[in-house]
Image (cartoon, rainbow, N blue to C red; front, side, top):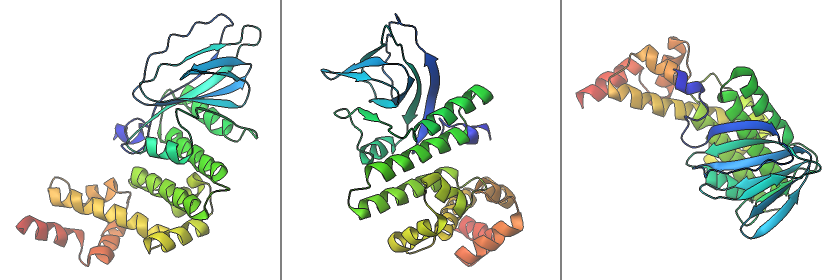
Length: 270
């Protein structure tokens, strides 16, 4: 289905827009409030960002944040106008992730000293310019960006908080991508940690491995699909990431103690 590769269609974290612009020295920007969160990354040049009574002079490597429904002002420096990239992020968990990264309306500007965040802004903009749409790859870059934000911002914080942040990012990725052919390595890579370390977090906090958690999510969604009676078993399997019906049936039997057809019949009688 087309919506599965639409980065704006996901519930918990979504990507609504991106762009790259080399601003003219005399550009006057008329900002329209958004219903989602905006981040701008200064690639080169300089500019001014004014928000909540404060004015920030920004340069290469600076990132500024605009919360939903806010109307800040910003403009390029007349003698060295900036070029920036931007992304617009929404979803039910976006605010929580931003807060956990210690970004807020009272702290809307931060600096990318080593230019590590730039790689994710670049990747999103380049993919959009190449493909003409914000796809799942772009959304994966947003998760990777938050993974880096958590890693850098929480280094000196309570280790438990950092572990929880990694686990949350992994679970978010699983819940948004279980319908695709993803592996434990894919999940760990998007969070920015090793697969072994990720599994140790799942075992410690969830009492199960990363692989079993992924299977659990898939099986519970599959059960809901089968209860509806609207899809064939092979379709239900494909909708939760199994291209092979026999593999899906085997995993379903291991989890529920019965094959999908038996489960569907049982649910239909109730």
